[in-house]
Image (cartoon, rainbow, N blue to C red; front, side, top):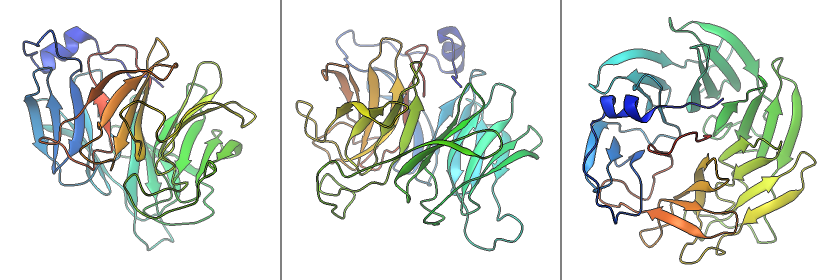
Length: 313
């Protein structure tokens, strides 16, 4: 599913600041350093709210509200005036007494909200009253309440594309919970290594989006790569860790697909010498990059660019 916000609606929600015409970036919504903030073209904070939880998902809704990850189990819809209008808290399901964490959520076209619950190993759809109206059990080979899932998106087909960080696998589930497609991340010819920064390497996949041609583009997490794979699991395009001029990939997180085919990529835990966010062409040329270690830091896992229309995220 795609979420769109007209520029007029966004201008009403967040008045625009005068932009330096030489500024190469865009207005960015992200979470890190104990806050959710919007940074304008002038590099100044336009809007912010406290958020001490290191979030792995974030959304600006068509109505101008924000859907935020305000605690490890809590999803909150907040107005630009910082009024809470909806909230859901994930709790251990019946028969499970362990920890629960939420790493992905999505407002659906019918108004319900999809929430992926690690620990509970399930996807739920929750209505405006906070009632669970649908539940999908997930296949998890290496259960861990912190690593069962990362990014999850409901597709236009009604299926769910799920990144299982601990399993190192992207699985597609149909509406009944049956796995209909999966792709296991490999090490790309490099040895596994511990660590969150560029020196770390593994298969802890973070994000995946389904393209219009049926291929799947994957933000590899600590795999330090971006991959595009076809329905047969063949890699048809990729960006390796040190393939881009002036950028070293670390924990690859945020992923947007632009109408022109370019990608916006989040580069978390990469250190202050690397951007936290950048746009790259299919020819692997960097169009622009975003680096703000004053407002955000080295744990900026989720970010959205707000002034580009028709973005798939």
